[in-house]
Image (cartoon, rainbow, N blue to C red):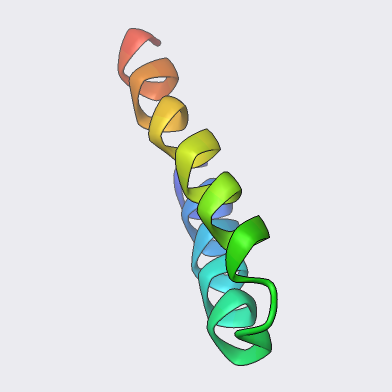
Length: 43
């Protein structure tokens, strides 16, 4: 089950790097992703 979120994150980062122009959105996503690991650890 952990593969799902991790794969999605990997794709998100890859697409963000390719687009480059969406650095602002990339930064926002990075902040949101920082909260994800904590939620997974709580489970």
